Length: 231
Image 1 (cartoon, rainbow, N blue to C red):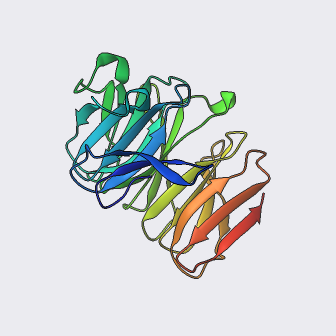
Image 2 (image 1 turned 120 degrees about the vertical axis):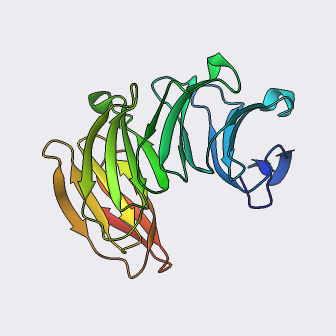
C-alpha cells in the first residue's frame, strides 16, 4: 500500500501485520504495482516526480530510481513485456521504461498524450488486442495507443468532466471509462464510437473494472455505491 505519509508498506495477509516499510519516496505515494512475473519486485510512483523499483528479497534496500518531469498519476507493468513499465504524469505525459536499461535511463518512448493530467492507464491483456493501451484524463477524453511504440490509435470524446479510470473488456473489443460526470461509458474499438452510456451513479465515478469473463462491469463512486452492470 502507498500513502500520503510518503511510505510504502507490505502486509502479510495471514498475520495482518506490516512486514516491510519502504521510505524512499519524498512525497505522497500515488501508485503501487507488483511485477507480473517477479513476485518480490514492486514498482511505486509518487508526487515526488519519481518511480522506484524495489526488490523485497533485499528488503527494498538499494531501490532503483527514475526521475520524471511531473508527479506520477498512474503506473502499470507491461503484461507483454514484464521488464518494462508504463507511467503517466500530472502534465499529461505517458512514457514507457525498460528496467533492463537501469535506473535513471531514458524512456523507450514518451508522448504528450493529454492536455491535462493522465489519471489512469489500462493495457489490454487479450491476445486479440495485444499491446493496446487505454488512457483517461482530466481533459475529459479517453485515448488508445500502441503500447509497444507509443503511436496514437484513436480518441473517444463524450464525457463532460474528467475521466478517472479506464478498463478493457476480456475480449479487447470494448473499453469502459468512469468519470467525474457520474457516468460510465462503453467504447467500441471496432467502430471507434460510443457503444453505451451508463448513468446510474449520483456522483463522481472513481473506480471501474471489467470482470475476467466480460459479463459484468463493476463501478464505485463518491455516492458510496458499488454497482454491477451486465454486458
